Amino acid sequence: MTVEPIGLIALLVGVIGLFVEESFIVYAFLASTLLGAAAAFILTALGGATIQPAHLLLGFLTIKLLGSRDVRAGALRAVAFGSPGFWLLVTVSYATITAYLLPRFFYGQTFAFSVRAEGENYAARDICDEHRRTAVVHAQFNLFDDERHGDGRLQKGRRLLR
Image (cartoon, rainbow, N blue to C red; front, side):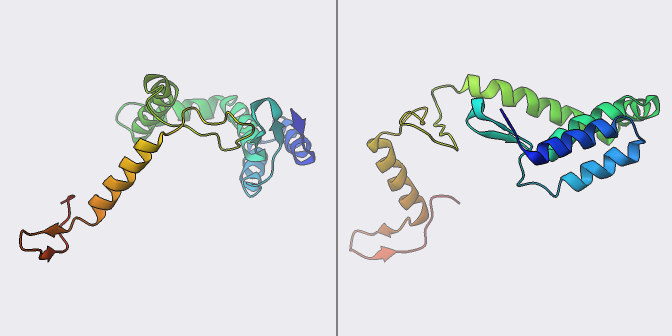
């Protein structure tokens, strides 16, 4: 793991935000979202994945706000059944569970390639030539489904997907 200078600044702002009023950490978090291309930490063990300053400060923001009894009570009221927050909570829970489980259900049936491909074994599974040709042929017929009549006339514009 490599710590960048902006990461040290974000870490310092996060620690300071735990001891001052809540508005400071909220404004610091909002300002850190402008640093989307910066990396607070570079995780070399995960292929160079980065943690952005906004993501780092989001953890401090969560700790600070959930430490307040009033904010905690308001958050529980916001996710009570019948409120829009409840449905947001259900959607986020569903997305989290499926993000963990669906790759295991579909293991070996989909193709996954690393974003930062290094070395020779970066593809989970390679696509064979036959599948490539079949995909190209299907795409062509779906886009241009022209039909030839028995007398050689060409009927244009008829599509498979209606």
